[in-house]
Image (tube, rainbow, N blue to C red; front, side, top):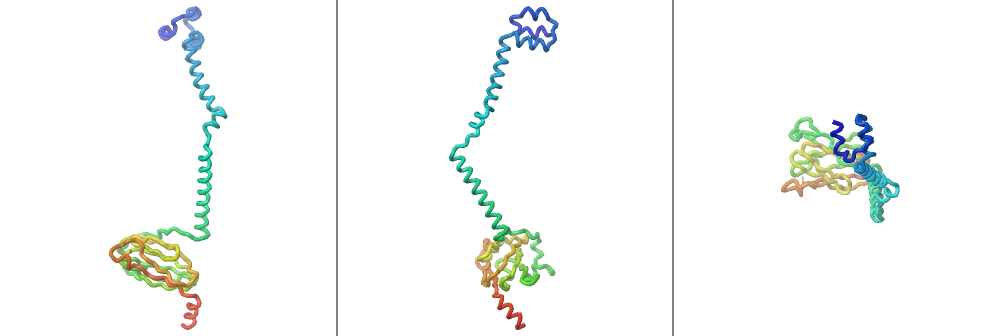
Length: 233
Ligand code: CUA
């Protein structure tokens, strides 16, 4: 067996290998690589490839691999600055300016909106605390209920909206209240109204033939008027 294995390589058998035919296999292999130029050369070639790879991990080579073009580097820095600016803008708008995403308050079966005891059967304004209100607005083709709401200036109003039929929209002019009204879902947003004025709200999601007639008004009364009304009562 060992004779057969060695034969193809042993074209020029040396006297030593013939002298020790019963040498262990391990020393045979080392002897072969030492004795036969072809095998030895092959080993050296392998070593050369490894040396090439080792050379490429040389610090100078690495520097070349990571070379960043001047313009590429410039755009990378500009991109990093833009991302940082956007991140700061998001943090400021969320915590200082009070931007909010419309939140999904709850899921609701739209066929139960008119059921007795449902807050949607008779939606409207409820005062939770002085100057703090919740306002339920039900949308249906092609109206809002209620469509005229009055609150005193300085009020904080939390809007809850849902639809009895199709998809509508709720956009309160001159505020950042802007949300979808979806059947089966109650959406909510909160806003504070410091200044008296009239804020129109419109359906801004096409909902059929009379979509354009779907609107209402939130009227913020001057605080003094509200107080006067309170005194005269
Ligand atoms: Cu409702 Cu458009």
